[in-house]
Length: 451
Image (cartoon, rainbow, N blue to C red; front, side, top):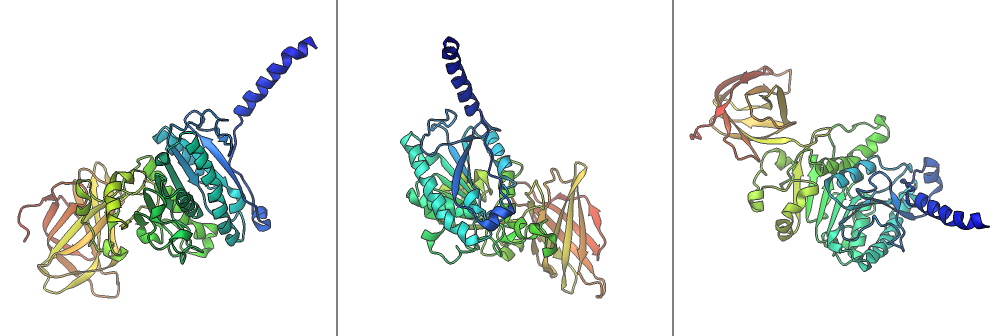
């Protein structure tokens, strides 16, 4: 009996320590669960810099159970979408690691895999409202313990974007920020604002569209909406059904990957306001004057730097293009070509920039460009990387039809102007391009004459 009196407190302490150190993981289900169907269960996995690789399972009612969950810190909720096979999202671990590297915060991964896993998509849609109600109650308890809605950021992917919107609406739009990554389109497209995400759901709502012709939402939903590659076919994603699951989810999933690139500051992708993607590709939308000295907004984590001006503009629709893999950002140059051929020429240009032992390539082929004598043809060249400084430039002209006679393009002047950096344009005068033959030259700073 005497020994037991001493051992009991020790055993209880050991149990408490082990419980406190228990690591919880995202629910991993299978296709069989999806076929049977799952009932909603919301699990909140907390990560902080103290427990960056070992999630604590938060209690919905006892917020003081985990001392790492500090209300004085900002809190980011990561909310996934529909899970037709039950597997965890491939991006979920990386995004919380990047967020914690970026800032001292609470990262709460919202695991509603039980509820999102179902071959019947409609059931998952129904569960979005229930999940939002659950999270709303939790955030209100956070407020009771001193948390500020200003410091809450919700990152919602697909259905998770609309869940974020429902939570924001429940909290009267006082949540600090909602980032919506390719919000789900099916079953939401025709709904009024109260049935989906909309700009009134948070103090600031930024949205990325990557799959508007299939799983994503086509129209604008936030204070600023970014359309990567027009919001449809993402570079590097399969184009045929023979690629299996990747054909259906690659464009949609790309939204999370693009956002993660911005959290770790891999590079910047600026969104250019424009009425259509085709006009953007034509180079008609490079004016960023409305945003002041900061220029056009940079997509992603740091877009809040443009928050004040974007709120005044109400809803802004922007476009940018990406590479097929990280780093996804591209570099834009405005290109002006003046020829001295007597006849009109139609065709495509490939431009390469060389410097520091590497090169960047831009293929301007979204449509055939028209070149007229003594008239500037304005083009947008989007390079796969940024070259500083540019030592040499290569050009190639093609008409895209091997059956037609070969033509020459006699360039009186070509001028390349970096869209973002305030630097002197690069020029070259008197260049003869033979079709499909690349020439390389040293550019010179442009003179004052605009002839």
